[in-house]
Length: 358
Image (cartoon, rainbow, N blue to C red; front, side, top):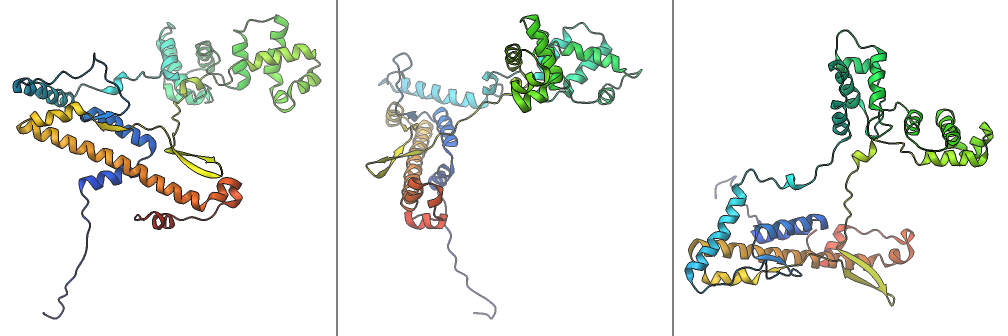
């Protein structure tokens, strides 16, 4: 061997498609796993939920002994799958109802207001300036710069359009302060005139006192009749301090656990939370024996992928359960006594205890 030459020996692990799928599934959260299962059922005819029941109306057609009938059936299945992939116009997101924004909701009302072109430009600038709660907190100079009209807009022109928008739905939008927001809504509130006057006075001059000292502080500072003051404050509490917030509501997605614990007779038991369990569709599995050529290759490949996914999900559940058992063993005192009994536990320790790679 020539001087300077060296032999190097190395080892490498080749990840098979099955192992790659198992690793990917193991890393999924519960929400991601459910989404993966939904997609798999849609794309792979060999998969179905174990608790699903096929009605006679939606049941697959009976298998004919005629090979031509079988070929026609499998061709229809394949053509349907291919067509769904190449149909570029199909967008499932179009089926989801779109939530209307505050801006678009107000713009529609603005277009119906029969304003002149100059006032429409002002209105659009004002609506664009609103924050998420529906308040107008910008300066009139900002509105002028946004409009860029000639001659330059006057304060009176801007305020006239602003007052119009403040009467749009939702009432109280485009207010410049909480006090103004409540006063606008009080204009559309039906109640006794005496109570309405008190509520307007409180909204106009005593909101800080109400926030700091409550109704007692308002009564002390204003000398209103306590009963009348209490009723007026109740009217104010029924109003919406953030009229634009309803248009920004977001859907809350609740995270569901994989397992939950219960202490039974002094022992911590692990329960599997409800899960979407997959199984092989026996109808499609029976078609493999009668399939030929490309159909046979297609069906066997999808059956293999279905089995891999089912095994990967089961492997994920077994691994997580082993991890949970190791945590319970180490942190029993924490579960029973609270944070003060929490012990340090590393990922390496868990891996060693359950016999997996860190």
